[in-house]
Length: 117
Image (tube, rainbow, N blue to C red; front, side, top):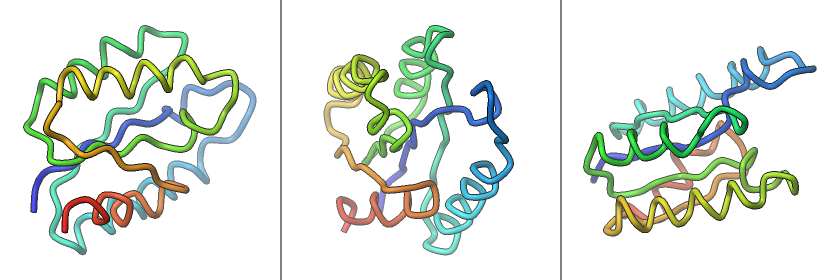
């Protein structure tokens, strides 16, 4: 069906909150990819730590049929500019990839499936 890249925030690097619940949800989301027999790579970034470099490295490191942009980047108003940069980096470095949006870490595979079918 094609390989998937998930771009999201690194929950372990966000100050002031417990990353464990998000890390557990990401693990469940990764297990869903495995259940579906889909190859998926994760690119978890920190907004203050040159996220573009990590995203470009991930995008150029594989041939992706779909890129899922996580809600942490998409929904948090202060990260609007980062969200715009992510979308444009996907367009530039993976122009053949569909772009999908999940509602949470556990449905990243389902978001990708909407475009991989």
